[in-house]
Length: 544
Image 1 (cartoon, helix red, strand yellow):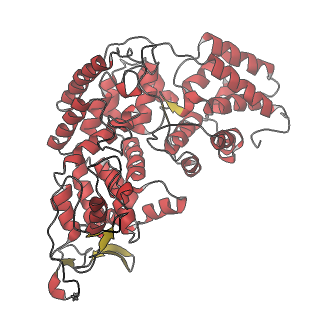
Image 2 (cartoon, one colour; image 1 turned 90 degrees about the vertical axis):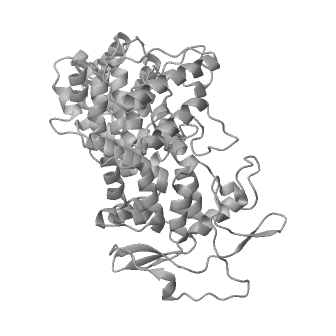
Image 3 (cartoon, rainbow, N blue to C red; image 1 turned 135 degrees about the vertical axis):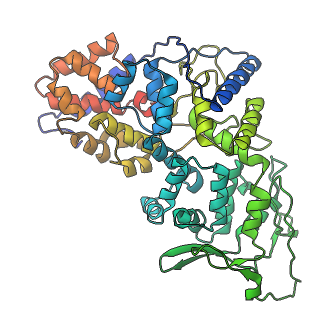
């Protein structure tokens, strides 16, 4: 292992000893705490509705909610969910030594640049999917990432953002990154349709490519090919570095066949929306792509557009006021913050997958529409709720995670893991090693989580983790600060506060102190081994 020095050949086996000690001794003690008094008009109503309707749900499930989590659990959880990283040691100590007002901390994080970066990470993955590092570089180079960050920074209506990326006609230079949503799919219209349905409407339609959905009767083959038809007149253009997705006024007419061989025209149709009427040419008719079919566009970033634009009709006639848009948005944000959607999986909101708390989902969808898709309002309302602030300790009565009677643990995303590791080791967040962690841990909102052998190997002897530990050697970094402490007890407390945002208990103190004492001849390597084991532990890898 590259983290070992020549003086410490026993490091490999000792790492596993430390891991076993920590796994055995890691426990959680839960106490009740009064909720925050901070209330803001709007989000307060969301919080009250969540509390009321979740209680109704608990009665239906026949369970009682877990008690509220302790402050040290809360600060770590809220930083991970809103800032995409754990708090620094200084941030933890300052808040724990203050009045511990949870509402004020939430407001502070919602206005932070960390919040912008974290939710840009999440919505990039939701809208664009995980990809290679080359693709991430292209997204940055072509302004998609900066566009996404600015929409979150400005708290723009999510409905407006969705319309903008689907229409791909930026009004000004600030919005030119919106084009990349369609452009990256490179004229693959089925890929476009298969990404729009789950990311925007919360439903998967790829099963309807060859036949009507076998289980969700409402999803028809006509919806799949109709969604394809709305976009199949597009064409990527690159004019001197200025990217656009032009749209033709003609073409795109075809038939699709079902399993029996019967064919049907691909009308402009989609789930829960009226079919958009369009004049179709005769079977033997030829279409001429004449200028009279187009109009000019006021934006210098857009060339001519068709008088009858399929994309525009999709935005205006289907997306705008679509009954699934607000519900999918609310369910997705709930899943981000609560570990799973009210409909689970969050991108299969069909008749097969019913909501666990239907009244709450309906209420949130209405509120989302009435608040013009205000992301911060929705988030604040949820994280101030009793359900969000519950302990993650599962009581004996708790059987079904769909009840949300306890806070559901979930793995950190690759970006969260990387930023948190850097914060713990160096005291400030940066982008070090994000690429490696993102590729190793690509899941965002997984339906199920299973740690793999590949994950274990990455953490146990991967170059990225070793490099991160070994390069954190400046005076203000964690390992040099630990070595400067005058007692092992202080070292242990700093370790736990820096990595786990909590104090070590007596058993943990004793176990780690014994390990460090037994290796006092090689203190640097001993500290590195303990740091490694804590970074690799379930307590660090999970939000809980």
